[in-house]
Image (cartoon, rainbow, N blue to C red; front, top):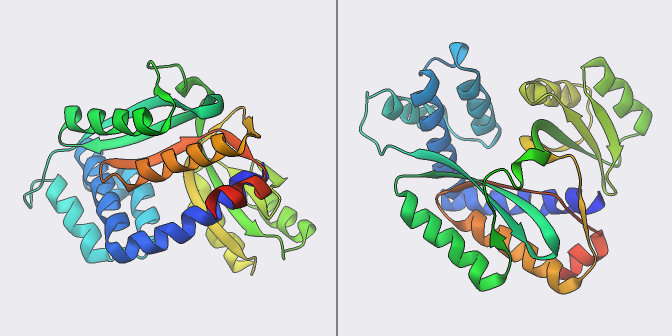
Length: 249
């Protein structure tokens, strides 16, 4: 599982760059918009909206920007009407991908996503071919400078499901609805939290040992995440840190 924590670190650094471009905030605003349209604009009565707002605040999105997205969704301000779609696909090496989309033009987005696979490798999959192995979980990475027993005591006290050695980090898994509460508790215990997210976790992983496949997989994910309509990309790859380092250098 070491490749996962390394890739999470790379993605976190990339997210900081995206924030400067405004791209990350634009995607979060879409997610807030859709959650508010589906379940109402009151976070106390809409768990999905509440979770996305917590994610947005963790990314330093301002309250004003969050409020504007909610107002667009509830009709208090003009905005586009986005459709939520999940694409399933395979990257080289048989690696599974789930791709969450929010789009105002389904045909355009589908064409763009297919073009990425056509150019780099892999292929779109039929509905259900990939999704069955993924479930939503909260995942928190804690720096390995923290002692295992301290991490164990803290996560068990706050209801985490699992603690694993993920190579360069301690990987904590919990119920997706508790991830932000658990992150706050770990930070209060002065544990060095690297990242926290509500994400889709696969029940099985695919080892990737070929350097060309590793490079192609990461390029596909990178290009998908650069697309404005792509909100999240989830995968089940397991790439050794040495190979991952070489593929991203």
